Length: 566
Image (cartoon, rainbow, N blue to C red; front, side, top):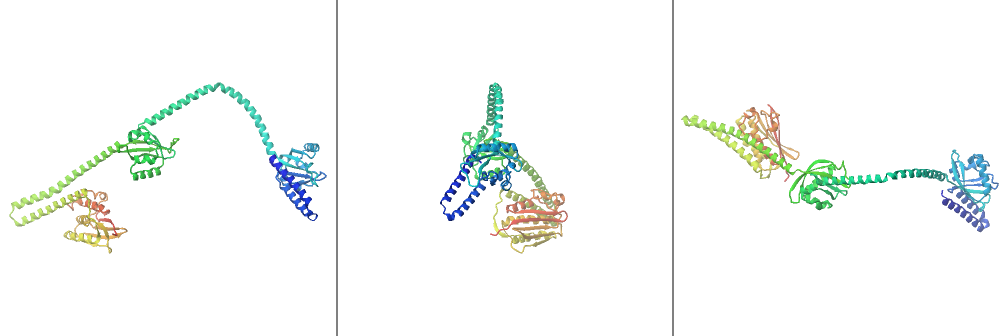
């Protein structure tokens, strides 16, 4: 407790005593005892609970009659152990010489002193400093021989001791430091010179770094700490885009982004990608639109998440890869052209083979017809010529179909039920199946399968699948057409009991001009375009086509088409 707090508590006690006397003087005789008892209780409560130590001796000054709670808290000695014991002082002043010295000093000072510090021994053996004040000479209390209040100043005394030690240590350090300063002063000018030289070297390095960043042959862009403004835009950025640093640095991205990314959708996708990646990515390519309107592809790398730069929220390095991309595109076009040449060479070889044999057969038959008068032979060779002409017509039809599909897949769409279309195509191929002694079975779904389609085109695709099944199924085999519903899709399955397809061949059967092994080729004189045409038509209808096959057991082709409710 500070002296101010102590003085305040003492003043409150004196005021309480003064008020008590006043009230005693004005109370009537009948109420005096009750009022006195109440006042005495209030005084007791104040004395007992006030936050300063208070003790009082009886009129003989032999025994302590008051030992409040603060005395108990500070010393650990309870009122029961101290009050009424004429030898109580020996508990908290156990050293006899020290105790006798205090008694002599108290006798000398009488009952009027302030802040007399004593060292009291607590119940736990510790020693605490207490500053006692006694003004009972000026303010006597009936029944008390003397009384005093005390404040525990142990912490203050310890602080004073520490402060004194610190002052002594400070004086010592000052002397030592004075000597050190005197010694250091001799080197100060040299150190200042060295520091000036070091700072100049740092400025030179910073200037070199600035010049490197400004003139290095890769693009450097950085954003300020608020993420919304460009903070760095080097010469390479200016060269590639045509926008100067004065036009870009310091402007909000709401103004610069539309210059570089005029397509809002493209910008939104790019921002989402960058937000997902953070500040760690390498060689990400995206397009910038330059000042002259040209579009350039920049490959960006950002490692600012691992190497942050003070004052920049993020930074990245870019390389103009537009020409490289063009070169890659040209290389890809060259590869495609090479593939087209190879495909053309294959096509010429296949067409030559497919045309040469029928033409040779037709030439031979014409020679026979010209040399013979036998009507039977003439009819036989005319039939051969007719068959080969139909074969050539089929080859030319497939070629024209594939060309049309490449040029224009325009569909005349309408809503149609898949079941009648399949039934119609099956009816058209019943004769071809019967000629080979095959069974062509049709199993249609019980409910309508409404799809948006071009019936003519889709019928062509189904015909190719059925003809393919007939060609690769031996005589006496079975081809089954089945439609059914699968979730939101209509499905047509064309299943046969034919020679099947080897697993390594399955991935290639939809390629143009592809022909499987000789065993399969022997069953048909086609050019390998039927399945390619069927797949292209199905894809144009937003459908898919797939195949399962086991060599020697047959194949199953499945066409999936989206249903429509319109």
